[in-house]
Length: 360
Image: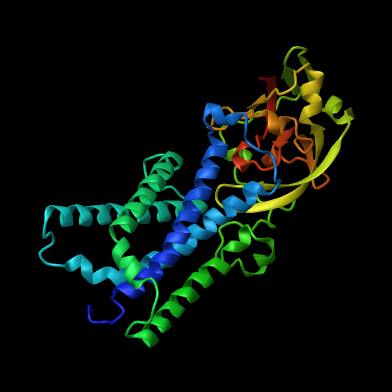
């Protein structure tokens, strides 16, 4: 099992280039997603609301590159597999530290990729919180990758270019790996790339399926208790607070925008949303220029029951308190009686079942 001529540095370097590009793309887009969901105080006021499809593209790339990295990791590990059985296992202290760093790198990468894959399925068979663990594993895997590249730099430079023995076998093997990556990419990328929707055989979510015309990630029945009072009124707190019934909201100037819902699991779907501009509600509440908004849901509990809409989003003319989607009144699962929809924003922050808006 160790005699294949493909267990050699040139093949490992070629695969390492591809894998490194996939992992770094995955890390940078994941970091962007984390900053949008949980920005540090100094950054919160500077998050951009444009481009409209920014989060849709970056999170789509995040999941696409992460899934593509899985067969690349398998091929890379197979190529260097015999090195795992070197004897003696450590020839010096430095050699022992190098092997330990590789073990940590492999463990972090495998955990990062497979927990991310399970997240696309919304399946969490572990006791630890996914988002925080995934975030720190990303740093650990990327740091380990950079250390590994630094340690192996002379070998990488030596085998980066040029012809080596076994060219025909290497080409056949790399072609097979490329085909595997292509298959898993083409059959999963359709959840975020509209023109690949016809090939989305392996996706957990098909964005065109659902009522009306898009899926639901968090139905009302799965988010704890969501009770909409018969006399529901939207409360808007600010220098000039006010309350509005649903009928009064519908009598205000209505605007229609086409915006995507883009979720952290990688799927996205556009829809036509109709409602009242957030900026108009801010102005009516007497909010000074540059104000943001805190949004509270009717959800009884949940990590996104209360969210914040920074000023760049709140003042964007495309940001709505939506009352309708694709021409129909919001269903309960889509956030009836009202929900937030804003450009370049993670789906988990497009708060449903809005009860209260507060100028901040």
